[in-house]
Image 1 (tube, rainbow, N blue to C red):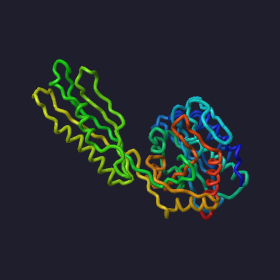
Image 2: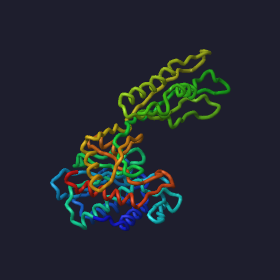
Image 3: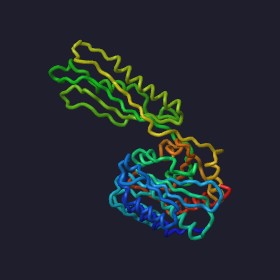
Image 4: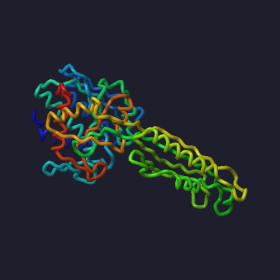
Length: 381
């Protein structure tokens, strides 16, 4: 089967030019449902996750019946994009696609969706036998994997699949860290900074003292910590009563994740507990609360796992050589793996993502389509 390059290019361009920033995915959802319906989808499910995500629409689960008596697989993409994403227009120079203006392009993740569409169009045209296939297309991925977190995993019948959502090409992501989100609230005591500063307790100073001690940055080859925002205080002439700090810890080791999270908690608590009142005039005592929320679970796949053996065999059948890597970020694949759905991440060719310099080559999308077809049709895969 030969990929129809110009049809793939046209579909990709159309998808990119349907604006779909996070929570405003309604138009692209409707268009995708129309496309897959015309391709003969057995079932198209739009879930009710929008009630929790705030999106204009729900996640999509699209099923195609198979001819081969083998287990189904799924492919996952997300339909939302980062900003700036208003009025996207695609510029094509040869086989290179970029944004024609001051917006993102949208190849993250519409390059993956376009490859899925072309694969199904080819299978329909050639009537080639294929396994049962599901496409799981989520909302709100770019704002914290929100759509995938709200998806009922029981809607996905396949037990293994591939998230088409990474930069570069011929890369398979096998490991990604778990992450904890931290919200740290330091409470002090407000007072007039000029008249009676000794009556107050500065939440800002206590927070700064703790932040100077906590682990931060790359801690080792598996673990990072970061504090991204700090908010508090009311005016320069008021001793700040409250400061809220938001941060995260990520690690490929659950033991390290919990240890570093615990260390940060204890540093803040001990710093506040060590506060003293040198004048004895303060009108209260400081306190601190540390809220920890798991942002996404760990992702760990190994070369002997069937989901990786299958993609390796599929790539070999079309003469493609893959590399296998660990990632430092989270994706919908973390969520699916956390539900027991073995999910590897396949790069789509997109580069310079999350910027107005975003671009993708047509040949990479063509080769991705070829890999998807091999995964769908090779009985040995």
